[in-house]
Image 1 (cartoon, rainbow, N blue to C red):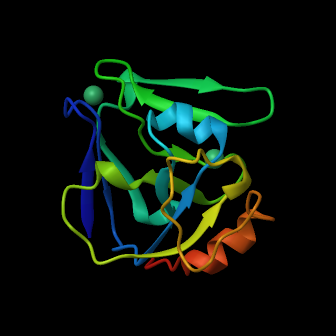
Image 2: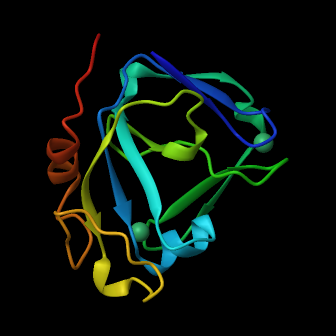
Amino acid sequence: MASGQCLCGAVRFSIAVEPRFFYRCHCSLCRKQTGVGHNLATLVHACDFRWEEGQHVISSWRKPSGYRNDFCSRCGSTVPNALRETHYFWIPLGLLDAELSMACVGDFCTDDAMSWDEQRSANSHHAAPDSLEFLQRELQVNHTR
Ligand SMILES: [Zn+2]
Ligand SMILES: [Zn+2]
C-alpha cells in the first residue's frame, strides 16, 4: 500500500501494491513533460489503483500519436493516467509519498537523450518499449486482487 499526491495536494491516489521497479524515458516528449532530462515511472494494475481525491481537477493533454499528459489544473503536476485500452495505470514516481525500495529496469529512447542527461541503467534501449506487455514484464507488475 502506498499513496501519492500532486504538488498542491488536490489530487490524491493510493495503490494497493508497492511497486518494486521503474523505468526512465529520455524521449523529447517526456523531457517536456517533466522539465528535466527524463521521466521516472512505473505501472500498476488498474484494480490496485484508486483515486482518493481531486479527479475533477485533472486536465488531460493528448497528442494525436497517443502521447498523453494528465495534470493537476491547480498546480500543474503530472498525475497518473489510465493507459488507453489497457488495465494499467501509469504512475509518475515523484508523486509517491513514501520512500519505496525500487530498482530501475531500463532506460528508453536513449537516442533522444540530451548530452547533459547521463544517467543510465545497465539495461538501455535506443527506442521506446516494444509493447506494453514488454514493459509490464520488465516491471513485474503483479496485482493483488
Ligand atoms: Zn495539484
Ligand atoms: Zn518518453
